[in-house]
Length: 161
Length: 327
Ligand code: SF4
Image (cartoon, rainbow over all chains, first blue to last red; front, side):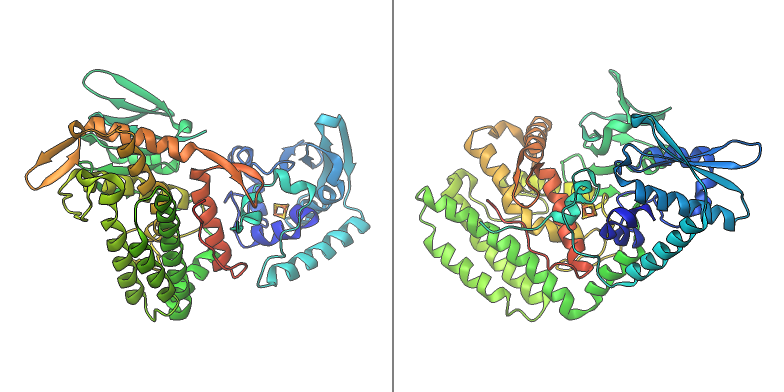
């Protein structure tokens, strides 16, 4: 989901399991709940700026924390977090969200407001439509490319000369 | 960074915690598993299922060579990167005759093109290769007309024969090449076979990092008991990496008669000879250059993987595959 917000091409590739890392299934939310195994696998995910930690705070609700390096793509992070919250809700779990940018010493509570819910659902629809396209959207150089695990795949070609 | 480890000694391979342990008569060698991407086993090595499970879990490939240094085969742990989508596209390009022929042609064109570029450079050294160059150009022109993979193979075979006949002029009489494979009957064949098997396995290791199925080749018949996609890709890189490696080793006088042993009909590289070739091969793969499209420094090992990315893009229909060009 977050990929959709950052780069539609990345979302398409991920959605077709053409991921550099197999444990990075977009929709396999059930796995998110397998604490340790999950976290270990996740540490190997070398998509810069994309790390997610799921914490249980026990008492009244789960707290899903999205930990990111920079807030530059806060919108995408918000959508991703909203998506997790929506899925957790569908599983019957009450959860709260938190966006964390430790390097910027910032944390932000995120609740599943009606607007966020609507935006996530809209993004989900757009994502589904994107994934149904026969070809991925062509690569476009954006700042995220330089640290993206797909960089070589996206931009390799045989140049004459 | 995980790197290939070449094991020449004989002994026992085992696991201790997260470490690969090689126990020989003289000593124990410990290899932290994160530092190993592949194991090349040249010596007589004992290992058990527990060890295989360990390397499979860690995604480490094993390549086995017999005591003459001939490639026996690889242990290719079950693919860890699977994309049903890509697998279907790969199978589709194999099953659809037109699509398969198109890809097979690209591999042959890529390989022949690189042979031609290599020879043109050699011609600049004044080697008198005009007749061969002409013939190769003629054959290259026919690749587009070939109506079957068999025809392509035949074209490729003729081109290769003509090309190998120039080696005597290029390297001197002592290194004249008449291809004999099983077993190689002279030093140059032994050297070239060994270099080629290093290339095949290096490509196989990169295939493991992608979503491609190594068993489905296009020029080389898909064969579920063997890997063939790496042979296709090797077509493009043999002149670039393996042949030029042999040229360097011979011209610098690095390989010497003493590096070869004879047994019966066959000639093979001694352990010292294999060590030498492997060392130079690793240097080759680690050499970097500035990549034109990526505008980044990449190594030749990465170049092999980039070739596979281009192939993946062809298979998903994004961009027709253009083979690597010798520069
Ligand atoms: S390299 Fe750039 S275009 Fe390609 S997937 Fe990554 S962000 Fe998107």
